[in-house]
Length: 191
Figure: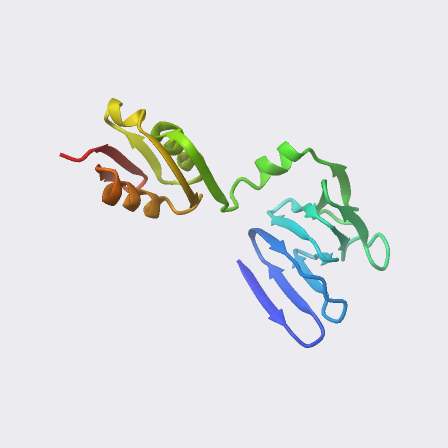
């Protein structure tokens, strides 16, 4: 859950639970600040993710840098600087200081896999495309007809647009879609 307050002097977001990713345009007159469970993240023209659970707050910086501080144990007046390719974790225990570690591109990719992104398929099989959508969404695409699995497609579509992809298959490619339950879409040849 997020609350937002953009005023004439600052852009402030309160992350009360969950995870959010921010891409921030620099503005020295209006700093961008995220508060999560007593941890403050101040952006300096950057892109970063903040997640908050019962044990702590984690910040992953994908571009630029941020300053992280905690009301329980502020490291400095402005906080600890965390640059791109690093992760800061602040425990919610008293006097906890931010733990900052380098993270690999593959770890960043894995931790931010929940973020919608454009999927660009070039001459991919339907089974490959269905597997990628299923990996990124709660609704799973299941190919019922074996002959349909090897059908090749080229498409660019958002990773969170499963319904749009299925509509495209049914209207343009002779595919029938059925929902045996809320979390599954079965794909078969239209008859």
